[in-house]
Structures are given as structure tokens and as C-alpha cells.
Image 1 (spheres, rainbow, N blue to C red):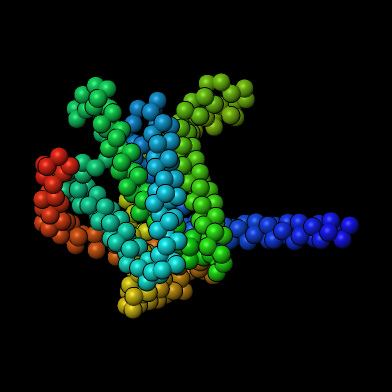
Image 2: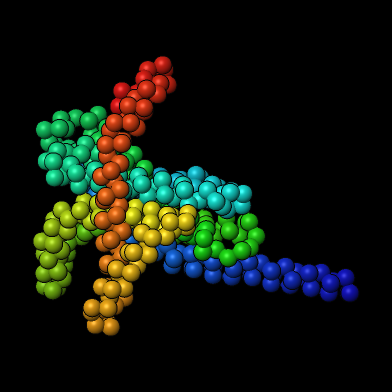
Length: 333
């Protein structure tokens, strides 16, 4: 009997330990997810631009492919690296994040430079049926591949920031608890982002359904309003995505510079945000500080990205062109 009681005590202790671990994971995931929420907005703003111009029947399949690529980015590539870096080389996290910030700054600046030069960037998916797309299945397949590849590449940078922010928000604890929290946050944020993207790109279909089949007049009018609003909204998404790229890139670079011992740019941005916030009513102080800080981050990223354009064109691309492709041919760019 005493042996049975001892066994029950052991089972109860294990149950309490498991419950505590679950509580630790839930609390850690909630804290880390909240801290990374700002990047979720950026990612949700950036991603829909890759769906612009895609045939409606292919929108959800492409979003699904990008979402799967995002999960792969987070769980297969970034999570093991984040855990290993946090364990063995925490000093390397900031420089790697700054490389990602420089990439986003370059991408955003290049889009703006092409806009003002009147040239197409050549990096966004082409709309099937235009003069750059013959409409043949193989052309559409190539366009889809380019769209998915570009979106997953950009997602990789944003996912790296999400996973790094998540890791920084996780309290000290067992290695496997950190891994589970990273996985939970990574999956949850991916579902949130690409669920929102799917709703955005299919909102016009929902509006059409409401306008045609709703029983109540108010619902039909709402559907018509959605139909009128969505073309304007979708046409503005590329601009929102570009601004988001610059905002995130600038934030990463300025914060990274501060961590590496050059705090002046970040302190200047903070001082200017505080000065601007002092000019508005107290109720608007928080929003004004955030807006000013985000705008200055984007301006800094634009300046850095514009400086990187000639470096990329004159140095990096020629170097990349000299790298042999599999099969013995050089990459001609």
C-alpha cells in the first residue's frame, strides 16, 4: 500500500511539473508574441503586394504556398539557428539582423527609385494577359514561381526578426521550453499573417457574394461598399508594403547600431519623436511618438537603401555573376 501511495505521489508530482511547463510555455508564448506584434503588421502589409495582378483562381493557392514557405523559414531554418546562436554565439544575432535590415532597406529604396525613374522594377509578379506575359500555362507557372520565391525571400527576413524578437523575450529556462515557445509563436504568427492576407485578397469576392445574394438590403449595400473600396485598397498595398519594408529595415539598423555601440542615430530619432509628441494634446502623445519614430526609421532606411543601390549594381551583382551555377555555367544575372 505504501508503494502505491508513493507511486501516486510521483505521478502527482510529474503532473504538476508538466502543468507548470505548459504554463511556462503559454506565458512565454503570449509575452513573446505580443512583443513581436509590430512585425506582424509589417509582414501582413508587405505580403499582399505579391498577390497583386494574380489570376483570382490562383490567389489562395499562392498564399498557401507562401505560408508553407514561411513555416519552413521559421521552423526548419530560423528556429534551430536562433536556438544555437542564443546558446553559443549571442553576439552574432545583432549583425545578422542588421544584414536583414539592410536587405529590406535596399528593396524598399529600389522600388522607390524605379518609381521615380519610370522603370519597372522587374521584381513583382506580372499580370497574366499583359504584353509581358503571353498567357500560356508555362508563362503563368514561371510568373507564379517568381512571385512565390520573392515573397518567401522577403518573409525570411521578416521571420528572422520575429524569431529573434521572440527569443529575446523568452525568459531563461530549459532549452526545450524555448524551442516549444519559438515553434508556438512562429506557427501562430504565420496563421495570423497569412489568414489576414487571404481575407484581404478575397474580400472583393466576399463583397460580390454579399451584394448579389444577401437577404437584407443593409448587407447588400455593405457588399457594394466593399466592392468599391477594395480596388482602391489593393492599388495602395504596394505602397504600404514598401513603406513597411523601409520602416522595419530602418528600425533594425538603428537598434542594431545602438546595440553595437553607436547609439547616436537611435537617440536622435527618440529625441525628435519626443519633441514632436510634446506639440500635440496628451491623448495623442503615444500615437504621435510612434508615427514620428516609424517615419524617421523609414527615412533612415531609404537613405541607406539608396546608398546600397550602386554598391549592389556595381559590386555585388558582378561578383554574383562570376559564381558558377550547378552544371558549370556562370550566373549571368
